[in-house]
Amino acid sequence: MKLDKIIAVRTNKTVYREGDNAVKVFDKEFSKADVLNEALNQARIEETGINIPKIKEVTVIDGNWAIVSEYIEGKTLAQLMQENPDKYDEYLEMFVDLQLEIHKHKAPLLNKLKDKMNRKISEAELDATTRYELHTRLDSMPKHNKVCHGDFNPSNVIVSTDGTLYVLDWSHATQGNASADVARTYLLFWLSGDIDGAKKYLDLFCKKSDTAKQYVQKWMPIVAASQSVKGKPEEREFLLSWVDVVDYE
Image (cartoon, one colour):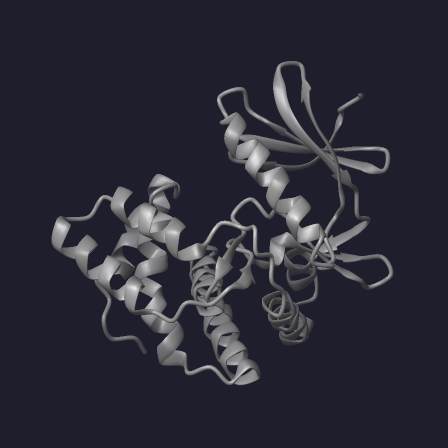
């Protein structure tokens, strides 16, 4: 396998194009269990019928674990938003519609979102009182079983050359409450510096799904706390600042 064309570089992984394949190669220290879990998530999502690049194999390349999937020709929504700022609102609408479509699906074998968040809150750098409050709030939230991407942002959506939308990177996928997934996307807009986009996104999602904004906002501290565990150090401080936020705009 000749890997010389880099498509993307992420923390602990590099994605290459090799013919009709996208090859995601993980660093040597990356957990084998996490690689296999990502591949399993991708296979389970494939079975739902959601448009994703189909997985072809899991292999080892020069001692590094790798996931080989279909290569999708096109541009990410993030690229298109940057290149065509006048069409930003149009792309944002496509983005929200796609997320609503994902939430219509079920994948009963995926990990449960509440279980994952409870575990993450326990690991967070927070005092016992705050952790207790977050566990209690999480426990009180309605239990759902919708497919949640867990890292849904415009750079994980590819618009193919024929206009079909494909969703990448299912390593954080769970089944649970869609509003937790929305809170996560909102925070991702903030982390990327697009605060205006974050507000537009939340308004649009709540309008299209007939969801109360306050309901999504109740998830924010829970999602921020759980995300802070594996977040980059510079993001951790920002995320933990959301944990104590009670009143939102």
